[in-house]
Length: 82
Image 1 (tube, rainbow, N blue to C red):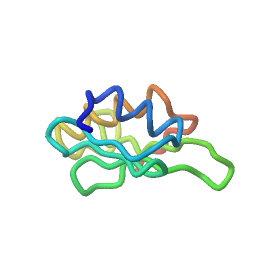
Image 2 (cartoon, rainbow, N blue to C red; image 1 turned 60 degrees about the vertical axis):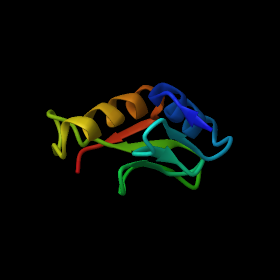
Image 3 (spheres, rainbow, N blue to C red; image 1 turned 90 degrees about the horizontal axis):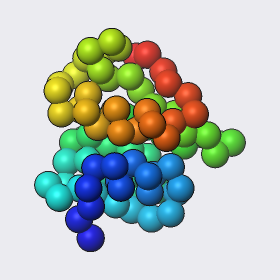
């Protein structure tokens, strides 16, 4: 099922099921969060959501990835500058 970006991030935060957006470039396997093939978020062994700050304020990667990170940050427990 193809979802909106915020729904992909929400499902990642709930570890509920794999999800991807309409174009398939923002996806989650339930534990990890990806922008294209770049790992941007993980679930720690304690169940915390960790997001890597690939934004203009962090280690910038691309505009689209920056947007994806923004969705993940909303649900993240930990934000890490790469």
